[in-house]
Image (tube, rainbow, N blue to C red; front, side):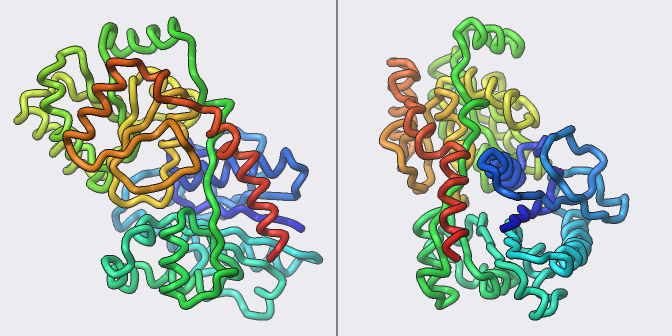
Length: 391
């Protein structure tokens, strides 16, 4: 059995800009290789790909689209289309040469949609097609999002209908997909993402103090948020929620990191922090590469906050816990963990939880043992393989 993990074309693999889906493809492939699986990544040809030992077959696109970006504008959409069409051509060649079972694992609606549109049914019979849904809209109540899905994600609906199996990253998403597609339970399977528990780990206190000094944060308590800077991630909401606490405690810092998707929203965050009188305690630390660099930021924080309203999984949650930093979150995502993340339903709850963490110390609240057991990429890859073999 040969498995092809298919990069979305958003940013090149290995992910250097914190693109969650690219991290999934990279880490899942690495763990499958450790298990002796015949697996290969298909990804966009890129100028700025990091050096890697991973087996990657590149798909050529016009040079205009070979530079990584995190914008979501018209050029980004054109890039997705060009890549998806070229990808379909590459996959057709692979299928024509294949003399055994081939698994094509898609992670993006454009890629899967164009593959199905441009590949004959006869040729597709040589592949088992798996589609993992990473779209947070499917995790909301279906009656609230049904029309949005029909208008904006018709490609994804079609891709899931034609796939042999669909992986959903949480139970709400799985139920919604089954209802929307009128699919059988054995077509839509519950899956999960993982974390590199070797890379994301606790650092010694002296190292943490060194990291803080690099940002002139000696003697400060850091509340950290990791994620792309745009409305869904909610950085401005958190500035408003945290401002009374920041005014009360001058040793407290709210720091956020991630690529700026919306410059307008970034400016709104800065305007709000100035209006509320906390601008000196609200710090943007830039875009951070995933892995060892990001682990340093998690270690610097007393807690990590997660205020996104639209997520399917949330890699940053288990990354932070694996790094020894508790997470305070607004989302109703559920993890197989008894400790490490704490949900707030009101501003008072948010403040109370953070106050308690600051008072008792983060080691009282973060426990990485369950993450290592249940969310390491090796554990996720094993679960993934067992499901693939049963298709």
